[in-house]
Image (cartoon, rainbow, N blue to C red):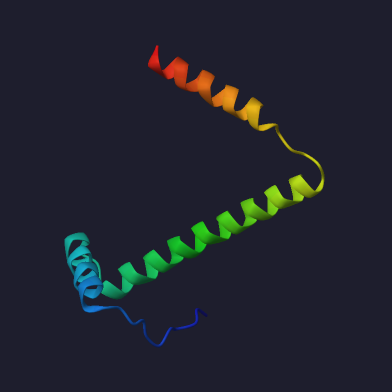
Length: 82
């Protein structure tokens, strides 16, 4: 059974904007806020996991030289301009 939050405190401007978005989407304001929080948490969890992977790679000595990355991105950019 999902836990139920008791309240979310927002400033008046943000609350108005959320209300306008909810109305435009024909959804309840609470649904929109819950969806936004779910998406935020998922994105932040992903970010933390990716940082942890990067730290582990660095700790394990699996690093890529800056010049190699720069050359790769410059080649990609040049290909896009062609």
